Structure formats: structure tokens, C-alpha cells
Length: 276
Image 1 (cartoon, helix red, strand yellow):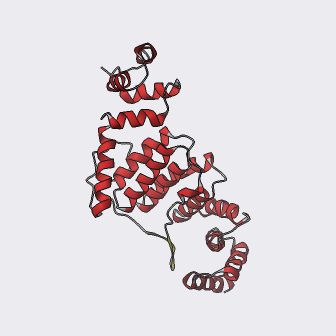
Image 2 (cartoon, one colour):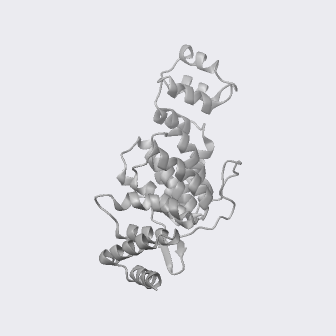
Image 3 (spheres, one colour):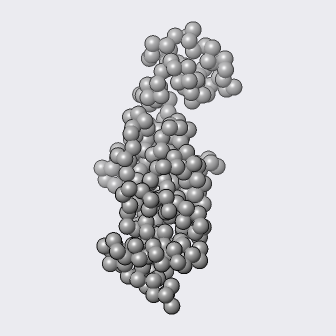
């Protein structure tokens, strides 16, 4: 028997007359996740209500276990042993994490944490999953974070935060190709999302795809409010794409607004090289 069917019959207001037609659609009569998808599709229950019942009554044992282990890890900052992953997951056992990206000799940039508060909530479940994933990344539990985010990607198709955080996680793992794959779809879905565009610029730059990086950073420097570092990153990719005049112009703009001494020194050094 389908485990979710039993839970819904016992612990919700849904009745067999509503659930049996959905059961008939299932390829696997025991697939609780598939039944939950149909229940949500038909508007019989929200995703949040289905998830709450499923967690409360032990359907998603792994998710519940991760939640418990996360709570324990938060108390003592202890390590969580990852579960076995299937082929769709990219993070390997013992994956090392990064805090910075090396973009050029003498230029290292920190990997900035996503600002989740910049987005409207899809619902409380979406926010909980994304925040949980970020916390897992911070305590270097990358496999568990990836599991949550990949599942959430299909559960919350309207969420920009999920692909943003998944891309950020892959960046933190140094998995640039995987970050680019997720980021390309995200920038197609959310072409005006500043954080997604900025991440894609950094990814393309890190992979040496400088004309593509130029496209992203040019969009950013046209915004009403511009981060000074965007001019520096734009200038770097323009230089690498052999657009020396434009690179020089943007290095100069950066130096007119720059505050970080180490980045100013890098820009000044590049200007000297371009003028030689």
C-alpha cells in the first residue's frame, strides 16, 4: 500500500473517493512522492501541508533525520555523516570547500553568501529548505545541502533563491562546470536577478570565458546602484578579451570609486601594463 495514502486517510480530511483516482495514475502504486505530487496538482492540499504530514508521520525519514542531525550539529558544530547519493548528485565524499576565487594573479575575490532577504518568500517551506541548505554549506555538509537543493529545485519552480544557493554551493565546492550549468538556466529564468547575474559573471570569468563575463558585468554596471568592484571585474574580462581601450576606461572608473587597497593596487598595476 502507498505510505502517503495511509497517512492522508488517517490524518487528513481527504477521503478514498478523492485519492483512489490519483492512485490509478501512478506507475508505482507504492510511490508516496508521486502521489503527493498529484495531490498538490489537483489542489487537494498545499505542498506545505503534505510535507508537514509526511514529516510528522515518518514518510520522509531521511529528511526528518537530516533535520534532527542539523539541529544537533548547530549545537556543537559537529560533522554530519552524509547519506549515500545517487548519480544526479555532483558533490563527492570529502569534498573540500573554498572561501575565495582566484580570478587572476594578484586578484582573489571572496565568494559572497547569497542575500536571501532580497527575495519575496515563495512559502515557508521554500525558505526553510534554502536556509537549511545554506547552514549545511557553512558547516561543510555539502552533500546534504546538494540533496536538499536539487529536490527543492523541482518542488519550488518559482524560486530564484534555490538555483542561486545551489550555484553558490557549487562555487564553494570549486565545481565550476556544475555551477555554470545551474547558473545558465537560472540566468535564463531570472535575467534581471542581480545576484544570479553577478554569480554568472564570476563563474564565466573563472572559467576563462571572458566575453561571456563581459556581457554579465556590463549589465550590472548599467544599474542605478553599482558596486565598485563590478567595474574592476568588467575591466579584467575586457582586458583578457583584448579590448584594451574599454578595459583601461573601466579600470580608471574603478579607481575613481575604489576603497579596498589591495584591489586598487591590482587595478593600478593593470593600468600600468596596459599603458606600456
